[in-house]
Amino acid sequence: MAMSQAANAVEKAVGHTGDAITEQNMTNPARDRQKYADPSGATMKALTWNGKNSVKLGGFAGGQAEFVRVPHGNVNLLPLPDDVPDEQGLYLSDVLCTSWHCVVDTGVKDGDVVAIWGAGPIGQMAVEFSFINGASRVILIDGGQGGWRLDFVKSKYPKTETLNFTDLPKGESVTSQLKKMVHGGPDVALECVAGEYAKGWAHYFEMLLGAETDTSEILNEMITSVKNFGRCGVTGVYVGFTNHFNIGSLMERGIRLIGNGQAPVHLYWEQLLQYIQEDKIHPYSMLTHRVLIDDLEEVYHAFEKKEDQMQKVFVATEASAPPAPGTPELKRFK
Image (cartoon, rainbow, N blue to C red; front, side, top):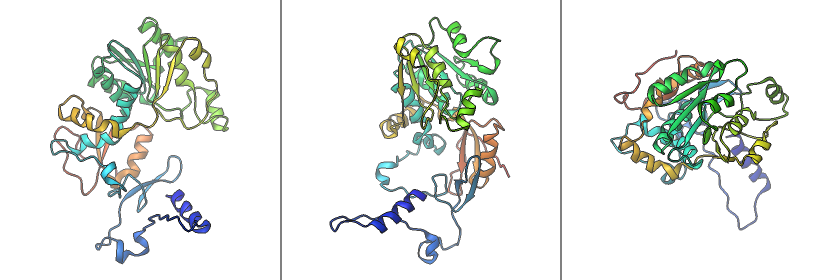
């Protein structure tokens, strides 16, 4: 929002040549409530970030809101058929397409042994999608405060093998354990974590001092864990530069490092919608909570602290339909 306002101000100051027409819609109902605002006087609830680990609920611009204006909605909106509840269709806009892209873009195929770093919603659905695309084994890696998710995901997909990095024997590493579990290592490694959380002191202080923006620890584990000519797909968010990257192992052993990037949602969402209708994929399996938008400040803090075993959350508003059968009942956090 701030960037749009700044760009608008610059364009007004600099101007254009006579043959150019540029217009930005900066409509703000608060400037003329009689013309734009709801006659009831109610204001829209939306969530905004006020800095790291700080969120506030109020009348702010943002996607986590009661109502969203969607420019070019004929392109950016997917109509949901009546037989697909909101609790399934909602995640076609993000989690499902991201996980599917991670799996297919990295080339998971019949017989592959796949190791997945991160047991959150993206990692969980990557487990399901790896099996759908023919993986013979899937090993899920997590630990620390998020270690409970390993048991959660395994309860949904019993064939999943798990590796908790906080329970490793002395002198062992994720790589050494994977080599013991799979001769030569997995065929494919999928990164569903992100590079913003350092595991060791070196990266912790380098990120703190601005010497790097992302840690390479997970990437290095992936590269050294897969077998020669293995494939590593990177889906977690990386924003800039990293230190201590094991480029030697990458080059010498012919490892394919694939940046999965921002998922091309439009490429997959119709196919995945059909899979939902055919009961081939199961978004309900990751859904643990239904909350009210009024409680989002408290929900975010609980999620940040890894409380209440939140995996995936459905945020209800006054316009939401009642909970679909088989989904969590509403829980209040105020």
